[in-house]
Amino acid sequence: MPQPEPDETDLSPLARIGRDGPRDIHAAHLARQQPIGHLRLTLAAAQFARRVARRPDAIPEPCSGRDQFMMLNALLELGHIDAARAFVDRTPDTGVTLAGLHSLRALTHAAPRRDPDAPGPDVVDEPDRDVAVAARPGAPLAVFVFTGAARRFAAPVPLAHEWFRRLPASIIYVRDAYDMFYLAGIRGFGAGYRAAADGLAGLAADLGARRIVCIGNSAGGYGALRFGLDLGAARVACLSGPTIIDASLPRLRERRRKEGLAADDLDAGTLDLAALYGAAARRPSLRLVFGADNAGDRAEAEGMAKVPDALLLPLDGVAAHGILPDLVARGGFEPLLAWLTGEDA
Image 1 (cartoon, rainbow, N blue to C red):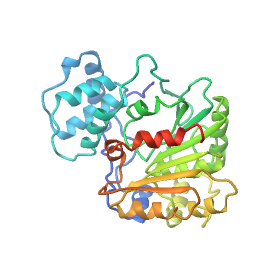
Image 2: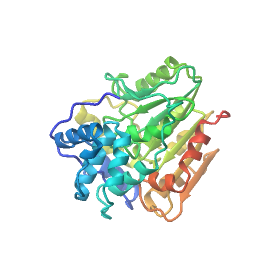
Image 3: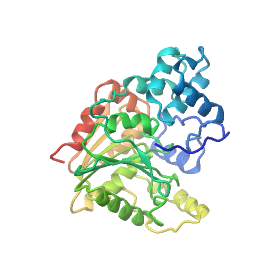
Image 4: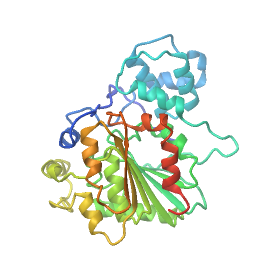
């Protein structure tokens, strides 16, 4: 997939929201008090990734945890999955939890190998929109993947796509450039949430999809749940996503003001997903996965417990906000995708 030219901006580490309560998670996200914006590649890291992709023997001797993360992240962001696996194999795990290095290594190891006879569609960025599409001609199903605050699905999109490319569907990755739980809209589809919903529905129609399902992680979980309802999705899977953000309304309005965005559809009482789902005449079936030991994420998921066809799936012993590595390690991610895309969806 085409990639933006690297710049010399320092690589921002992933925010570790961990055990924060739900309101603290929202505040940190909206105020950008944590470095959870777009992960950028340093010029050196991007040059390294391209060199290793050409020559696997260029992998360096053991290096610091921070350097490992920068190098591995660069390989994955640029789509060099095989080179990333070789890098993980040749560099020891430092044992230091640095900006998700351990999780990134684990996901690189665990990602399914591509079937050479049925590789699945590649991801193509749409330069004028904050979406990237892996179209499967003739597929009746469209899967919308709503990424989190770092524009990732717990890992760089090219790595996550090693799971999604195997699905019998067209895959649409959606990003939230405004970092506002997708409520400010999606760039390239006009101003505001409603324009974004119409744009995504039109994109699914253009792909020939007759059915829609949604999945999202972290802040993207809110996007998946909200758009899933308005797009008429059959099913929605949410990984550690917020569901009640009314308390964040003042910050959302202030962010909209600073961004020069319209203040439509940001009224008190309209952001509680349980209330929206409860009032809907038709709603998707839901699966909400979260770390059982993460008090904030548990509270958010439990807010949806009374919604019909909502199943809460706590991961026992997990306190992390980023649950994908644990879900994969426990053999739960592929069954979740199978449920999401089942023919009865």
